[in-house]
Image 1 (cartoon, helix red, strand yellow):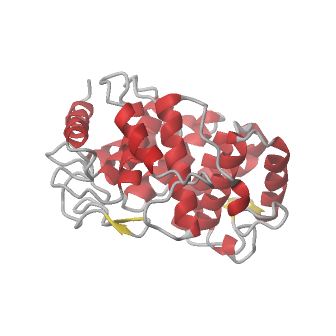
Image 2 (image 1 turned 135 degrees about the vertical axis):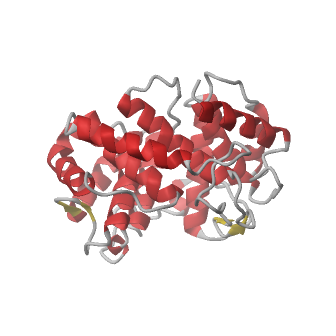
Image 3 (image 1 turned 90 degrees about the vertical axis):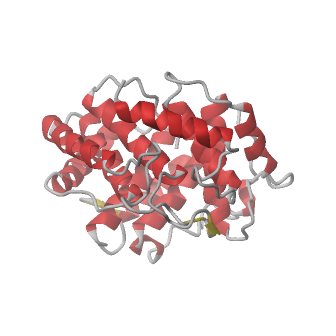
Length: 313
């Protein structure tokens, strides 16, 4: 076993025994997200340790609104409710399989032909727009609504450029983060990436000589996007070399407590508008989940044989 895996599992065991705190020093706020993220880690390391699934499910389902089916944890923000609900449903899928409790999509998606996130100004920030698209595809897939899936994919073509999806070209790291969000949605619907070979080639060419920006999201997003080139057989060895370099970078984010931090010297302070830590230099559940997911994708792309499972995200 790689040493980082053993250390991470020990960290997660302690987090579990402390009722899914954000760090080993406490912080019990935003319990819906804490349980949802822990569920991804439980899936990743399923072949090494059996974590308790029932308490995770109980916490998550406690936040399900009985009338609309979305998951609400002390927030009134539409985008936060949608994002946390997608995260919660992903966790339930990772824990249980395909039978997910339904959501009433009409609450937030009143007109499928006039979606709030399919607007030019929204696509100036493809990270946000791509996230909203991904959530929408997730909900549609959970209800097997193939007609609306095809409709929104046709709408997405309006924003397709040679090197990503956007209205006005943003900074590279924002472009890459937006691509990652779109890919998570396409993965959910089991999209055939051979249809996007040309654009993936261009995206890869724009990334291969660059390194990800620092921080958990930037690293994970970079890994997720670059690994798609390997999936379609493009510049495979160069991509693997780049991913192995990032593998080494990620391990520098692991602390003596076994967890990873979002930044090298600080944990994440807020999650969906809620305070979760004071940002100290220690392992945190947000950083640990992002970094372990990135390492899991590197393991798959580079065929490292670490026996890790890729969770639904």
